[in-house]
Amino acid sequence: MTIAVFPGSFDPLTNGHLDLITRASRLFDQLIVAVGQNTAKQGVFTPAERVAFIEQSIPDLPNVTVRVETGLTVAFMRQCHATVLVRGLRNSVDFEYEQGIAGMNHHLDAHIETVCLMANPQYQFVSSSLLREVAKFGGNLTTLVPVPVARALVKRLGSDEQ
Ligand code: ADP
Image 1 (cartoon, protein in one colour):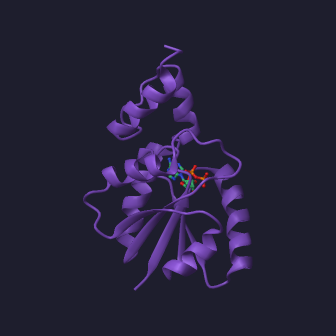
Image 2 (image 1 turned 135 degrees about the horizontal axis):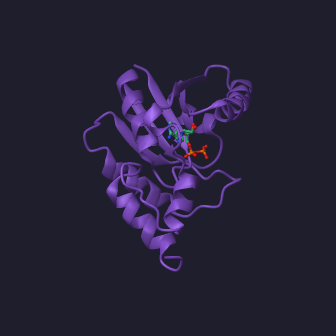
């Protein structure tokens, strides 16, 4: 039985993340989505809010669970008996970034294998940070995030600029 972990900030969940979660859930017996705080990024939604968005969006994926993760991803993975770390690649910038993280995680625990899935071309341009900008200025988020996420983004970020 292979347990995989998909760690990320998910601030907030996008349809690009959701596509990756769905595809990874078909590849591994169990998938744990680990919501963490990227120390270089300021959070808009609390970890609990981010977990709730993901849980609401995956009712049809019984082998996926969502957890908050603090600390080192490899330590979290050992606790969960997970051996595969899933990440997504949209472009060469992601590749450079993921290569560094994968190298460090391999150094920290050589038993953990990083598996990168290519982004669905439909969502290659979608990032949480860009969507936060679009929401701030009242842009259309339809088809890029689940409906509850779009509503929450506009409520939290959109009010005074529109
Ligand atoms: P982090 O702050 O850890 O990079 P993110 O939530 O921004 O967290 O991204 C988590 C993972 O999801 C990363 O591997 C990222 O490359 C991937 N990802 C982000 N957006 C997309 C997308 N639109 N399609 C596929 N993968 C994505």
